[in-house]
Length: 126
Length: 456
Image 1 (tube, chains in turn brown, green):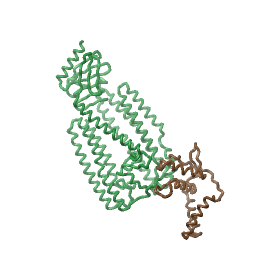
Image 2 (tube, each protein chain N blue to C red):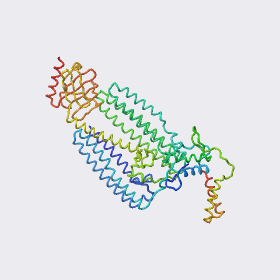
Image 3 (cartoon, one colour):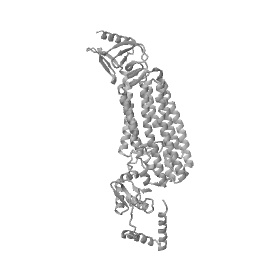
Image 4 (tube, chains in turn green, brown):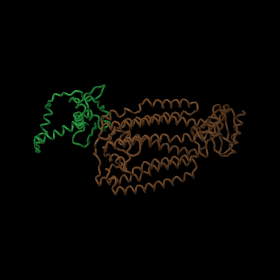
């Protein structure tokens, strides 16, 4: 899976990296249990600071998307909590997005359509 | 003879320079004159104009440098070597001017017409390719084979006084291993949005390069062996053959490298053509002159060259700056040092003196030798010196000074003006010494003094 980071974006690099990996897992481009490169290797290859990659990996580990152990390095988690409920933090973020959409005149139907497109894009084979 | 070797070297230089820079006039790898451009821009009228100017300038410069080689035929061997070094220095700097001009003009045109390609200030990689890119590369332990061979040769040559040649072979193998490692650790290349393709292309290019470097190590150890055999050869009949073989052998590494480059380019082009989506990124600002890379934000010390074959140094890193500095420093030291030694040797020739303690001393730079009178087994005045090879010293068309291996005689030290008989031949226990003065009469007088020394 391809990681592409914009150096001059408003979004910090660690956040871009974190988000792309999460989307990668969701869209199946990163499979459960798949090995991820070591912090140093990824930092060298992208030409960014090791601390940046470390921060992204720590956040991913904290949120349960990846596991890191000394022997095998970083891996995508094999087992996600498929409870089917949206954690409160995510629901809060969604509220914020919907609010901004609503102010821009997007109604519920249009928003659902947008969501559908995004979902189907993620379900497409990589 | 030297003229032939120098002309051959200049031919190689021409071929490489012209081949590298002339090919930049075509739209290749998304670039013209090392400026990333979209495909449509390449056919623009202004680009055509820049190309025409470039071709004309290259033709003119090539002719000028060819003409500048003519003095080689009229200089003595000593000054031929010096002149050639200066010529090399000037051509390397001069032949780039048309290209740099074309690069600058194309860059200005790009900015004026806003012909930017792809995303700027974006870094990319392919995670899967990164993990698997070295799976098919040659393992490091393979280098133990050429290394052990080189060490073996060094030990084998110690008794013939040619350890230096063996040490050079060891150093060459280590250098090639280091280059192979640099290629292995190079950044993952993102060829397209298809991850499978990225994995296979990264693996293929690393496999080809790593085995090429390993083959080079083997080939070069064998090459050193051939050179050693040439020197050790004491059969005059085969002299010419032993000169030709190592020289011709220099083609082998060149062929191996060009072949690797060609194979990889072909594999990549075939794969990308069938897949369709190449990802380019616009890094023009780091490639200042088109072929030099300066990026202080990039940690890599070696990066793949944009034009030509191989890798170049990132002058933005401390290690990179050191690398360039040391390389230029060594080159300058060698050129200045050799020039100095050359002039010095012209001004202060070898001198043979017999000391009060009945010792014979021949004083000459770092090849001085001295021994007691009793060490001389035999002395003679001869009119010919057998043919042979220099192992350490200087040998031009007028003088031969230093350590040599002569046919039938073996290890010898020479302090002679060539083609200027007679020569004094002194036989010691483990080597011969040949000595003469510029004036034959003086040579005979020295010989008489030695004869008297022996009688006592």
